[in-house]
Image (tube, rainbow, N blue to C red; front, side, top):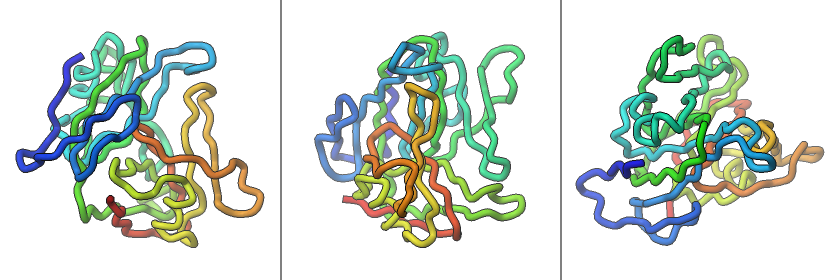
Length: 220
């Protein structure tokens, strides 16, 4: 695996990060995301979520597979908000979908054949505006958004994330459980299917909106 430099030239301060824990400050970071292959009690099918930095020079799903290690990576998937479906790129003959571009701050599902420690270097974008879509014809089927929470966000839990976005506008926050290929759903309200959970590096989250919000994530 090669380590790809994602920093903009002006970024001078860097995070030293291992096992998903940030050790530094400011907007730059270095983080180790372990991508799990199928293993009892660890990953049911080798599917992982992967939160890419907002400053990234990985242009496509194919480039990401190469960066992680092509032979170790079965596919890369992106969530299509308008249809609540997944677009799957395998990089191989007969791929269900063609290679697709990676937008800044992409959230992806990555399916692994072999467990791989993937080191990401990058930086966030202060003042970033992230549109969170509510249900709307041709825009969002159910108001579900697959979100790359910035690595320097001050929201440490699902509840803090909902509060920051605007609690009344957020129906729920969901995280993918690799060991079971299931979703943990937190509504922040009485009768929530799951309790409040932490927001952790490397992971992506589904945020379901009842009203559209132009979210500007807070940074430390």
